[in-house]
Length: 94
Image (cartoon, rainbow, N blue to C red; front, side, top):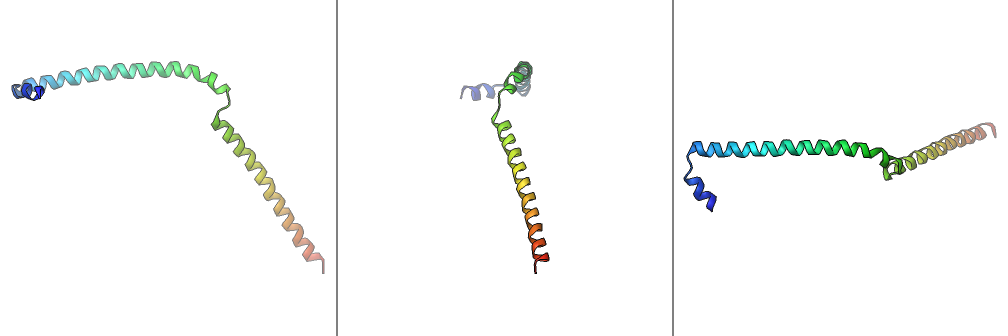
């Protein structure tokens, strides 16, 4: 409510100056925040190689998926060979 009373007494020019000052403060804080985030990203990027040495859930899941894919490929190959053998037996046995 106090802000409403203060804004009623402001001229348009004063209000624009106030908004411009607020925008400048926001931009200054935003630049500082971006700089801090960049610094953090640099230090965090240096720490990542240590973390990559430990197996992660993602790499474990990918490895298991590849192994399962290989097994399924061999099973499909075996089934195709079995189907061909059955057709050959049916063709040559009368």
